[in-house]
Image 1: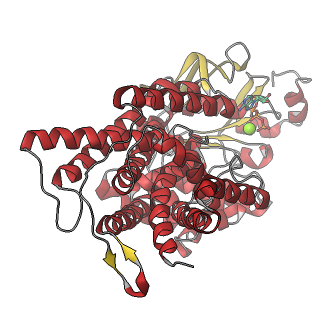
Image 2: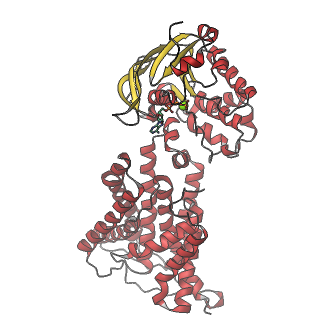
Image 3: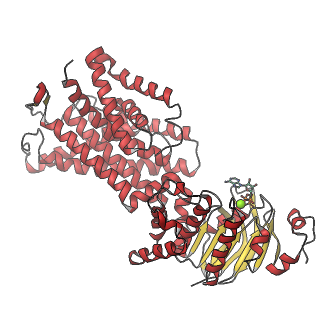
Length: 242
Length: 303
Ligand SMILES: Nc1ncnc2c1ncn2[C@@H]1O[C@H](COP(=O)(O)OP(=O)(O)OP(=O)(O)O)[C@@H](O)[C@H]1O
Ligand SMILES: [Mg+2]
């Protein structure tokens, strides 16, 4: 199943009097694959963390379908159907690979767990190879696979990923994007934060450009890919109108 | 040298190890050295004393079990005392430490708060039970003779067995169960643990319950083998820290090994230098460890 994600005037950050996300509205349809782009420090991570309950929301609200996510304790968000893969420290390095998967599977009914872990092993064979080794022993690409698998194991209605390609070779980044496209084709709503704009535009259907905590442009991926002033858009020196 | 020193050292060390497990658990997950941990040891012993008195009064006293100095009343009271000590730790966290955590207080503030809690609890216990020592039983024990002229009382053996059982049980709990896995996940990264669906607050409560129950067991053991005093836990604090640091903060087997080393170190010090150097032994071990591992105590918790 897949559900839409909607943000209504979301204001979020780390201190109430210094919001980083300054009122963001957008809707992602059920089954849609949307990219969020923007310069460093634009507030992309803060935005998605606030949606997932990992950063404070000071105003507005985020919904998954009809479920109000805002105000939900962080540990209830996954069970509500939204999985989030943070930008950094997104696996438990001191736990084994198997334990990383078991922790997320815990949200599922007992009878369903083994099958979902098996499904993740089928999707990411590297994770099945030495399940009892510490996750910290995985390579950068394998770690991202584990982080994605941890999120996917609950068959979420929507998944948000914060720069899953960071630090990966172009080849591995391509693999990650292909995997995400496959997951999306199977019906899961995906929101992908990326620095790797050109590569991401090849898989997302729509791009949202965030500058200084506000949506600067929200356009189909094809339109964004056709523009040659993306860099200037990021810097705020180009007109937003296409 | 009289080899009896080793028996005494190992018995004392197993008590220190029990207490150090709770200290190291709380430290590695909540990231602060809890100076009130000693008072959980003391409170555990007094809870058991009161409960044993109540049970004894209700059933008209119980006879000692087999060769031991204690009866069923104390065994039952011990179980009840563990629950009561866990409740005390949970209350302490709810009214004090949790508030400070939520406010994002600096570690040093939380440490000072634990100092305050230690002082308040110790004074409260002394007010209720007075400063004079108390005993679980007045039964005399006949020591058993072991090969090599060693002597050990049945109570001492019971204490060693209890420590071994509890240590293995806690180790299996932490390494093999879902709740233990959640504890290790929270230890590594609480924010990610929440995102992975773990109820971090519940996991923290579990850590307090475990740590307090073990502290209580240490207190009851010390009460049985030595005596019960309002300062018994506080006096144990330095050896507890030395044991936790020696074993590697956060490591449960390490805390027990550290406890045995400190216990033996103290016993050897008493044998060679005299009883007045006992407290110094743990302190010197602590200093020696900090010299070798300077970021042992306040550094990031290791495995
Ligand atoms: N934990 C935090 N506490 C306080 N301020 C923070 C925290 N994390 C980020 N910030 C601040 O919030 C602002 C936006 O950061 P954020 O990580 O959301 O940007 P971003 O768009 O994800 O950047 P990047 O592309 O570099 O990942 C920055 O000014 C940053 O300093
Ligand atoms: Mg970011």
